[in-house]
Length: 168
Image 1 (spheres, helix red, strand yellow):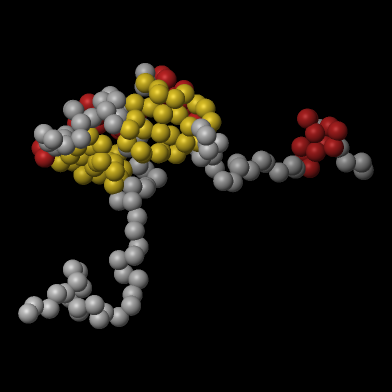
Image 2 (cartoon, rainbow, N blue to C red; image 1 turned 45 degrees about the vertical axis):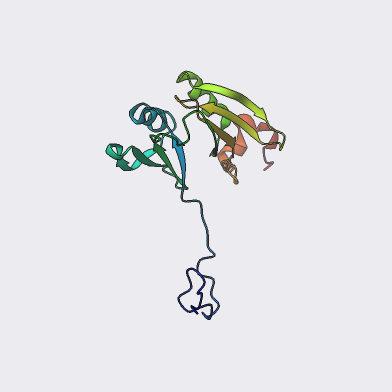
């Protein structure tokens, strides 16, 4: 009779407890495209992704954002694989949804949802890439607002701060 060993456990289930293997992160998301070169124009020139690994000859290109995060893999699907034109489930974040909206309008990007609040109260847009793959973008303004300049003696003595002039 053969002893059955759990898959992936060379010690037969008697390994010391550890947290190895429990740390997960999102590595990449896959987007099927019909033409990698055209898709690259959209993702690099409009959405500002950069090429991290160019394997066009194999039908795939990995993209990164300058700010980091999970990679996006554009791939040409093989017969029987998912075709382009999907709701990707990808949610990007921007520090100003309205400024991004202006840029995307100027680039003739097609919108599924223009800036509006979703049912969770988030301010979002949903756009389509050139193959009709849907991507959501959520407004994520900076956690710390841009600091206002501190008042100086000079600014307190005149200008718009006249109401706050100090008495001498």
